[in-house]
Length: 374
Image (cartoon, rainbow, N blue to C red; front, top):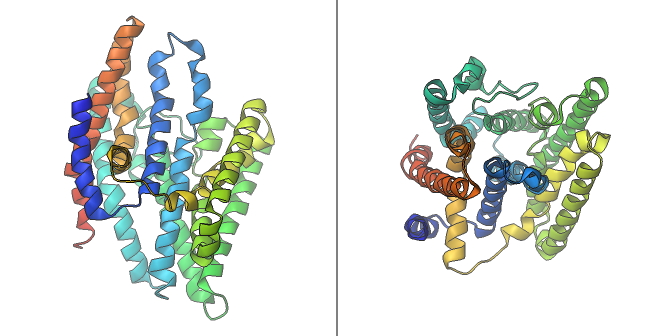
């Protein structure tokens, strides 16, 4: 397994030098990937350690980390592509969408097709498929299907990428004679937060819906999923020196806020904070950590290469690690000893990361490179 890892990371070490990636953001993506992996890997060992899912309290927020990071990157793009160039035209918006969609849509639809085939021939989950998956509409009010369950987060991000920049561009183009575009973007973000909290409050007070399938995973309740990262990107742009000087203080504040949020989540599982405010404080806690991570420096070596590797395959890993791969490997563990299950789990890891590597090199990256040509 070690030799296989070295073979994988050698390629990504070269890629990292060529692409001049931000190592701190790679570390953040790598941590997010590991959080997601640990959370979903607990299924393998639950029969032997019934209380093992307590670990999920501490790793369930891996996707919230990705939301915060995604918002930060999108915020920086909005500032550089639109505000600095003072360009709020429809053509500029289409260029923005093209760059986002070349990276996500082709590989999403390919993964969708693979899940459909595997579901039809092996798992049976193809029965939950419907046309809404094609347009990211399958989790408008809830997400409880077993077919491609991880795609709820992709739907959130795709709609966020489309709607918030569109609202910002229309508002900025209309008001730029009176209000600076930065202020407009900040106002749109704050409006997103207020409206989102109002929606979650209404859902909680009126229906007391399921925390996971509705409050955490529905488009309706999580319209602000990545907005906190955008706010940090705006402030980072406007107050860069302050953010650099106080990056470590902000990081500690983010850790404290995260611990505080987790404490109330664990001790008050039916309250208002758990169902409403938690989905503000958790992505916010990751967002305020971003300036410190953005300025993080790691010397060249295996550690840096591993985090670069994890970061670059994170999307491919995310697409396949749960469905269909866990769906295919978990049935193999039934009735076996803990040692045999551990062996099957290690085999699952090897297959998952090997496929993620191949997917990135021969599918995801070629599609991403096309956005520079068209």
